[in-house]
Length: 252
Length: 279
Image (tube, rainbow over all chains, first blue to last red; front, side):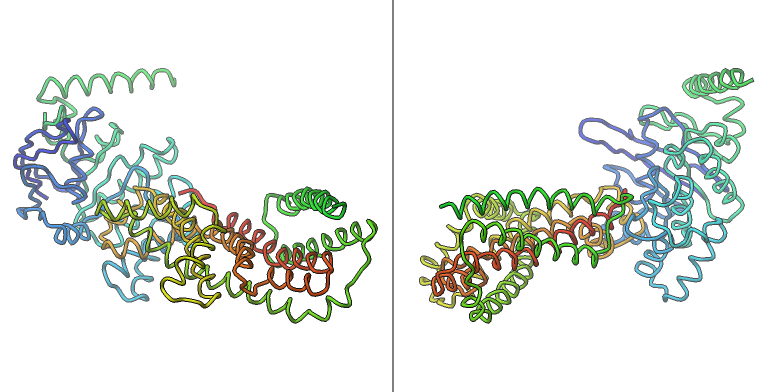
């Protein structure tokens, strides 16, 4: 997949979150957006999802320019899957109904066909036993897996993850990361915003490092983690890796 | 005089008892009792209330005059049925009014929002009795409506709509922003978002207070007796003046209202428990 940004700018009030981003990023499976908090990575992800519009500039996915009209943006969102930090499942619907709603109402699948597809995906994520439960009866990890299943059920062209494990404790984080790792082998490209550095290293093909509203560094993942090309990225990595090492040392 | 003071003490006692019993039946293992059990319980409570009240009043020296009141039972039943019908119709009509007010208050057009707010404030700021009087004696003759039931229905519905509108608005605004975003993310249209996400969630929030509002409507409809509308309270007043028997007219009146309102408030509590979930 090729993600192309041409002068993408986005401000909230006086604060310029994304400042004239221009880049062309090509990756096979997984692109990870890294960077300190407030660097604009989640904002960029929301623009790619079609949930927000840039103030200026344009975004191209595989050479196709993202639309700007409301109607066309809605069609765009139907072809993109996004998984949020806070799961955002519908609390009044069961896990299964959460999957069925977009399938029957947005993608206009006949009921029986939608049911077969939804159950198949729930089974794949070992969630079939929980199909009739409301989100309030599910654990955090289960909720996030249902959210991933909901996004996947619509056969999206690519999947976006916005800090999918930030709201989870370590055990549930592992449970969700395993699912995402499993998706790597599917043909759907993933764009990921995460704070799990170790996981990013394991799963990513390419890293885009954002800092102060700019893409500071864009490299294949292996190179990025060995020798990042910018000072900011080096500092970011060394600070986080140093912390990971000390916490590992404290464990032993 | 001694009759009326007796009346108020014993009803206060009954209320305290009723409150105690309510919490006892509702907090068994934190599970709400079944609505049917609650209804039976409420009816028993109302009858017990009537029994104790009558007993107190009897021993305070007032002789029973039940036979002459019994002759008027049809008037009671008709009034009671009219009260039920009027309250139910007014609940439906006030829901329609309330939905319109909510639309006004959520409109992007500023004067529309102001109009909606003004309506809610004026109606909530003045007594229902005053509204009934103005509607019946000032506005209705002006527009040529003389039907008491129609005027009563409209007065009650307008009054109730102002409160319902606030409940509906709170229900809609209580739907989390993340839910709207989620609906957008999966590609629902604006209408589909209302149909499948906002309304079902808002309704769950609104249903318990809506049930409470129905109980209020039943009680408030008694004020319509002042314009001579032959609902339940008006029936009791008429029977009272025909038979000169206060207890025998007004105790059944209280019981008749309690039989309606107690099951509803139990039901409201049940709904509240049932629809509770974290979002």
